[in-house]
Length: 143
Length: 143
DNA sequence: TTTTTATTTAGAATAATTCTTGATCTAAAC
DNA sequence: GTTTAGATCAAGAATTATTCTAAATAAAAA
Image (cartoon, rainbow over all chains, first blue to last red; front, side):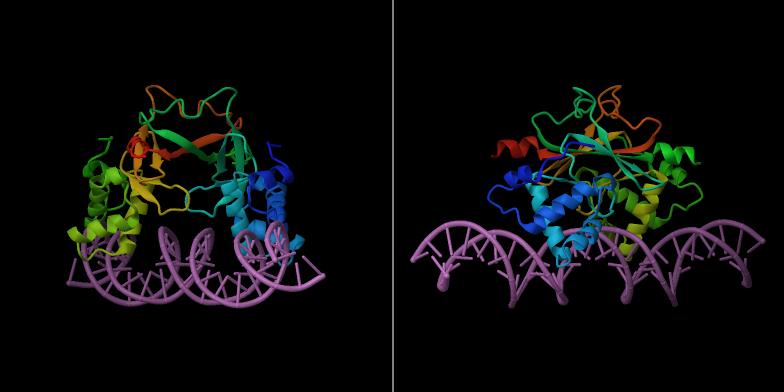
């Protein structure tokens, strides 16, 4: 599994903000569902099983707070619902056009993702977002 | 300016579909506003000046048709409105976090954008989407 | 011309997300 | 241990980009 951090490390990243029960549950659900790269609503569905009183708005709030704190990342493709990912290593995402699965794609050892690009000189890149779309191995086989 | 194609070439790409007045206007507006990477609604605003009867739904339809035909590409970042781009060369987009401008970022000569990535073996990539966020040269200076 | 099919229009519908407001909790001050 | 102030949460309303629907129009085929 990809690099994730512990609840305590999340608490640290939150800085002045509190590590509330809700934030803890939301973070743990994102970890639990990491493989499927859950949307806010799948996080909500699962979180409610653990904490029945949690609201969808709170799930959104927590996801935003965790994202801003740098504990998880938000992944978008096209206009679909955002997905969330607890893997903090630099990585890209591969979306299977057929089964809709999302895979983490790691950066090769010592590679620089911006290397092939002619960056505007003098610009500072803070974030790079790489998404690939195609057929995953399984879907390619099962023609 | 980046590589764009002529109306006639768009007509060809449309295949069986017709190059209607509306599609022509929409394509030309996307070309005209290429530098700002217009959203559907900015295309609509400008298109209405040229063809006052055109509707927003038609603008959306045309943008979708042109995208499907491969005459323009749809660019997304975060959850903002989609933007459209007539540059058909492989390129990435740089979004300035301060002034909100969008710049095309070219692929270096003979470079392969997927090179730094550890692709799932056996997968076939059909499309790659690279977005960068940061400060453009202008915004970096004007502290 | 008549028929068929594609396209456009206008407005309703949708879906993800954000906002608003009042209630609740927590931490620190008293 | 209360009180107070600020943070957080819950519920539902509001927003926004986009898609859908159905009727009208335009173009192509017969």
